[in-house]
Image (tube, rainbow, N blue to C red):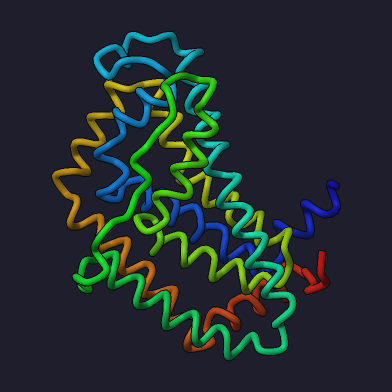
Length: 248
């Protein structure tokens, strides 16, 4: 297990992709359809009224938010494993696939910046189970499924990179790091609600700038994929760190 983890994390492709995935998760959290609804999320996942979030027991807030994050992580990691396995089967067409997926990622970047109005509509699952810690994992899974159109641009980029990993375990690991970027802010907000909301309010004021920055990041990743620079950087990292490309 230790050797597998060392080889996986140390692979050139993941050394480059993991920071992008974590940042994509953070961008997803601070998107207009996630961050403004944070108090509601916390209330549902912990069974605590919005007005009582700051005074609730920290242990309850920690457990509820962690279970919620685990719920949507299962959904996203399964998708990463699927895309990774597909990439393994289509490895001989990796260059052509990188070009096509890179163009898609560029389009997703413009969607995130709001430059494609027809794709700004959001489709969500509005029905939620009864509140409380016991249903927090289910609520997280519903979030993962129902908010896919909302987090789609950033998650789509991560799934594209997962496809490039060439194996299901690496694809799953990459989307797991995306879930860390998206999930850790939920846990921090649960543990320090009032202080975290101050940061949230600052982001709301600068929401347009956050969207532009996130969209530029996605477009940049897409350009790297289309141009072949991404593959060159991966090869360079593999040479530098002495990692191979053997399947795991």
